[in-house]
Image (cartoon, rainbow, N blue to C red; front, side):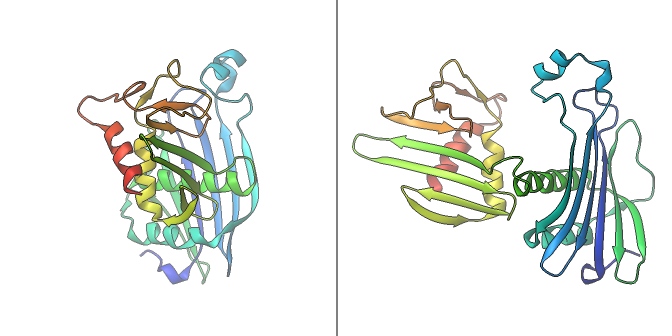
Length: 252
């Protein structure tokens, strides 16, 4: 018997990456208590088995030498509804996690003190939500700034400039279109964002300064501008992510 949304007072998400090798292998535990106007949150994230690697091997994979992170503090109440909804709508396995595969285990507590420990069948959804909450914690703690993607379309006499900001800390997506700010749908904007990171970007053809010549360009948040048609390539020939990015931004 699983708990009702209104009865939930606490959720703990335990994740183990299983048998994937270092420097990628890691564990995290998220403890979240639902308070009146905020989420009381604790995160403990630890990268594992790194003693098997040299510092250089870790850095070559794009990781800092000490990626472990701990946080205790408040998180915006915008995360309460999606987290409770995920719990209520999940289906559960009647077996333990496979240690080789790893994955998520969930503990839930209700206002009567009843505790339920379970393994969700929708593992990917739980892992994705947990990653979003970790990103929200990084922003809340000022470890990372919100993600900003810039899009630029220059015609003969028209310039369309879009700046897309994802604020995970408050679960808000904003677009500034030629100086005008607009609230966006969080889920739809996340979908657009997922396309942005699918193609291969050729940094040898990218430029650091903001372009001024005719063309369509994107800056994925690192200050480098890539031109559509000249340095952005679909990795999978059967899936045209590049067109989806361009169309998605032009629809904003």
